[in-house]
Amino acid sequence: MSVIEVSNLTKYYGKARGIVDVSFEVEDGEIFGFIGPNGAGKSTTIRLLLSLIYPSSGSARVFGKDVLANGPEIRQKIGYLPSEVFYYEGMKVINLLKYSASFYDCDCDARIHELAEYMELDLNRRIDELSYGNKKKVGIVQGLIHSPDLLFLDEPTSGLDPLMQRKVFDLIREENTRGVTVFFSSHILGEVQRMCSRVGIIREGSIVEISDIQTLQQNNYKKVHVVADDLAPDSFNVEGVTNLQVENGTQRFFFKGDINEVLQKISQFQVTDVSIEEPTLEEIFMHYYE
Amino acid sequence: MKANIYRHEFRTRSRSVIIWSLALVAITLVFFSIFPTFVDEAALFDEMLANLPPELLAAFGMTGVNMSTVLGFYSFIFLFAQICLAIQASYYGFGLVSIEESELTADFLISKPVSRTEILTSKLLAALTCLAITNLALWLSTFIAIAFFGGSRPYETRALVLLLISGIIFQLFFLSVGLVVSLLVRRIRSVTPYALGLGFGMYVLSAFSGVGGVSILELITPFKHFDPNTILQQGGYDTPLVLLNVSVSLVSLVVSYWLYMRRDIPAVV
Image 1 (tube, helix red, strand yellow):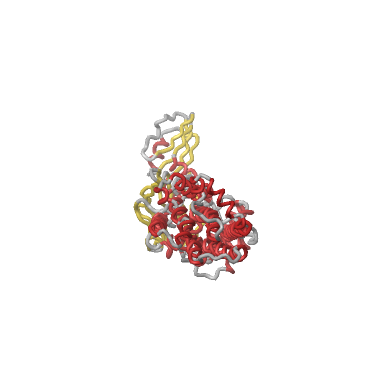
Image 2 (cartoon, rainbow over the protein chains, first blue to last red; image 1 turned 90 degrees about the vertical axis):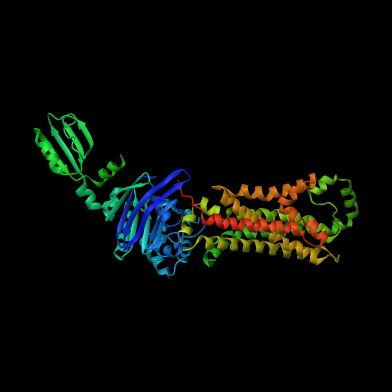
C-alpha cells in the first residue's frame, strides 16, 4: 500500500516556481529519501502534503485520503520536523511539548520524558534560552511524542553535532522498524545513503529520478577512467557518455548503457591505466545537477 | 473550537489584558477623582468653554456637554477609554494570525490535526474573552468611581449601561478589521504601527469630522458610530450608524475566514 501518493502536483507562488508536475509514491514502512539542492522544492512538497500551502494544480493523497479534504484526520497520524524550528519563545520546553501532545489522542507524558532523556534535552529551560541545536532537539521530540505512522523530516540533522546526529539516525531507524514510514528530505547525500532504501531526486522544482539507492549506484552509471597515449577528444563518442573530462593523455567520464561498447573502444588503444568503478552517490547527484 | 488552542491563546495575552485593564481603571478613577472639585467650579468652567472656538470643542467631543453632571463629565473620560479600547482591539486583530506567521510558529500549529476554521475560531474566541475582561474592568471601575466621587448626584443608569455595552461592539470592529487587513497584506513584520494607525487614526478622523463638519467621516469611524456624547444625551444608540458598524465587523469576519482557509503560510526563505 502507498502511504503517500503524489500526482502531478504543481505549486506556483504568484509567478515564482515552487514545484512543477511532481509525481511519486512512498510505500508503507519505507524510508524514502528526498534529495535536492536548496530551493529545489523539497520543503514546498512537504508543506503541500501538510496543507500549510495549497497546490496550484494536481493532487496528493496520504493514507489513501486526499490531503485537502481530510487534512486534520490525516495529520493525526503525522509527525513533522520543519527544517527551521521556531516555537513560542516565552514557553518552557515541557509546556510546549505538552501543548503539542494535547492535539493528539494519546497519553504522551511518559513518551515526552523518555524522548527528552534520550535526546539529552532539559525540559525546564525556556525556548528562547535554547541554542539552535537544542531547538532542533525539541523539534524532533515534538514530532515523535504521539507515535505517528508517517514522519516528515525536513533536514533533520542540520545544527546537530555528529554524536547527536547518530542518535537521531538510530531513533529514526528504531521508529522505522516499528513500522513508521519516513519521508526524509535532505541535501546531504551521505545521510540519505545511510538511511534510505529509495530516493527521489528533485531539481528546479521537478523530479529527475526516482529509484532504489542500489540501482542508482550499480546499474545506472559507471565511472570510467582511461590513461592512454594517443587518445583524441572524440575517442569515446558513444551514446551514454557524459561529463567527459579530457586532460593530456587521461580521460574521465560517466557511462550509462552497455559497458561492452566502451570496452571495445578502450581495446583499440595502448592503455597504460584503466579503471571502471561505481560512482559515489555524491557524483551521481552532481551529475543530475549539472 | 479547540480548548487547547483557546487556552494557549488566552495565556499568551494574559499579561496584556492585565495591563490594559489596569490602564483603564487608572484613567477612570484618576479622572473621576477630580469631579467633586470640578463641580464646585463648574460655572467658571462652562464660561471658559463658551469662550473656546466651537471647532476645538467638537474635536474633543465636548459640544453641548454639561461638565457639571455625572454623565456629562463621564462622557469626556469615556473618549479616552475608547482610544485605549480601540488600540487594544486593533492590536489583537492585527496580531491574531500574523504574529504566528512572522515568528514562524504557524508551521507548528497548522501541521497539527486541526482545521483552519477551528484554529481561527479558537483564536477569535480567546481574543474576545480578553476584550470582555478588559470591558469588565472598565464597568467595575466606572461604577466604583461614580459611587465614590459622584456624591449623591442623580444620573440616568440606563444611558450609562448603554454606553458601557457599546465598548465591546466598538472593539469587535477593530478586532475584525485588523484581522482582515492582516490577511490582505502579504506579511506584517510588526503589529504595533498597524494597531496604532488603525486605533488612533480612527480617533483623528472622528476629531476631524467634528471640526470640518464632514459627514462622510462619520460613516467611517467607530468613534462616531458610538459617540459617547450622543449616546448619553439621547439615551440610545444612533441605530443606522451602529448597524453600519456591526455590518462592517461581520463582513470583515466572514472575509477573514474565507481568506484564512485559502492562505499559504509563508515559510523561511
